[in-house]
Image (tube, rainbow, N blue to C red; front, side, top):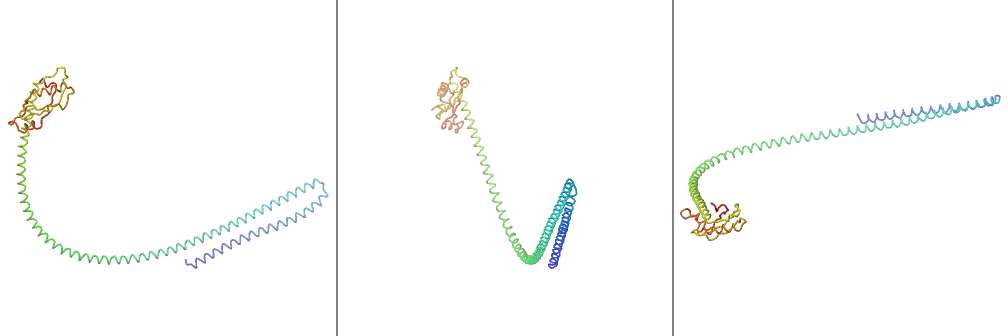
Length: 323
């Protein structure tokens, strides 16, 4: 709809609303005028009737006069009530007319607001169409630029691929040469590794033999120590006398140091039994058993050296003297 046609439609509706308001006002005015005229006529008639009734009242008795007055009073009150009701009805009509005018004005206001909203939407729609057109134009331009760029990049990539193919050919030739040299190097490396492996196997075999010798020597030493400890225990047991009254659960540990010939150099209790007489009897038994039968050189020199250089610990317990 054009701007001129919208304006003509608005003017036409405004005239219709104004005409309707004028018609309502004329109807109300006519009703008020008729009521006022009728009321005046009734007042004149009532006044004349009052005069006639007064004249007649002189010929009737006082009771009849009072009755007539009451009727007149009732008629006046009825007329007054009728006038009041009519006046109220006219006021209600006037109020309704004013409310109708307000409603029509509100409707016109809403209609104008709706027209304004339509105008704004139309403007916004035109603006959006223009923006969409601009966006489409820009999109087409960007698409054109993108295709041109892709074309340039494709040409650039083709040249790069050609260059890469040439470089690949050169690399393959270089790799073939390096591979040949690598094979020669690896062959030499394998030869060296075989030689080193053979040497390592021979060295490990020698180590195993040496370890076997050491284990055998250690076993001889252990056997010599265990045999010596058994002999020493037997000899100490033969020299030890324990008081029979002492508990048979007593035990002590002594540290014994000897000379290369087995003579006891010193004896010391390092773990007491808790009974000093038991501890002293054990030390005395060790001294009485000297010289002790430690390992000989023929049995194992290492075992003998350990007894002489380091000394040795020995457990003494009550039943030991009975063995």
